[in-house]
Length: 125
Image (cartoon, rainbow, N blue to C red; front, top):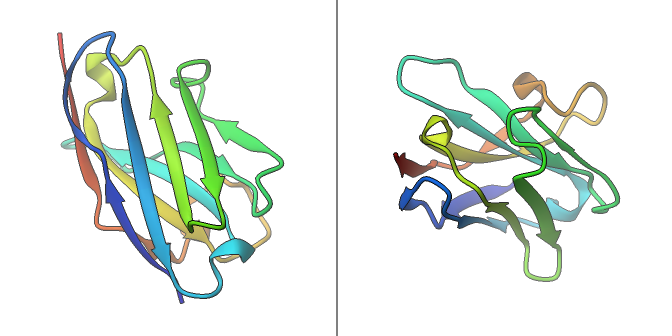
């Protein structure tokens, strides 16, 4: 079991930066790939970024590639999402999640069994 709590969201102007954090509790955290997803009003929850269980590889949605960076600190049980050059279309509730099913694509939200409550990111134009 893993419990996840996101923080770091807020309101920022276009072109600005935010860093989201996701604090985990539970002994299995270091076993799981972790992901960030986001959901805008009236839209499906979509994949943003993921990082392997050992931090060796990362993956990003095309829409954020080159602007967002995901990292993890297993000693602190925290994953981060550094978001730079933010755009109004990045406005959404951002969720972190633990991928407890090891096979399959990291972008498939059905493979993530543990989710945080979300943090709001709003980008003004």
